[in-house]
Image 1 (cartoon, rainbow, N blue to C red):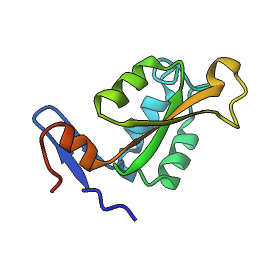
Image 2 (image 1 turned 45 degrees about the vertical axis):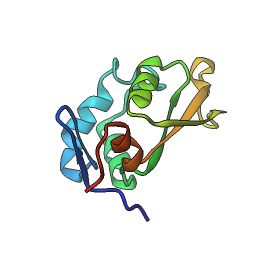
Image 3 (image 1 turned 60 degrees about the vertical axis):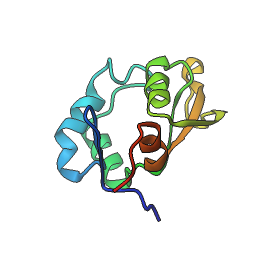
Length: 119
C-alpha cells in the first residue's frame, strides 16, 4: 500500500494521480503518433480507457520505457527517479523497441531532491 501523497506541488510542477475524468486528455495523448513514437502504435480510445481503469497511477511506482526513448529517460532522471534495471520487454516484437529500462520513483525521493518534504 502506497503512503505517497495524493498530489505533489512545487513552484513549477504539479503531479497527481490520474483520475477517470482525465480520460479525454489521456486518450488524446495516447492517440498522438508523436507521443507514442516509442510504442508499437498509438492507442485507441478503448485501449486508453482499459489502461486507465486497470492502473493505479501513483508516485510510489515503477515505470519503464524503451531504452531508445531518450526524451522519457531524461524526464525520469530530472525527476530523480532511480534506474533499477534493463530488460527485454516480453510482449514487444519490434526489435528497436524491445530493450527497456525500469525506473523507480517515490514522492520522498523527488521532493528531497528539490529540498522539499511530503505533506
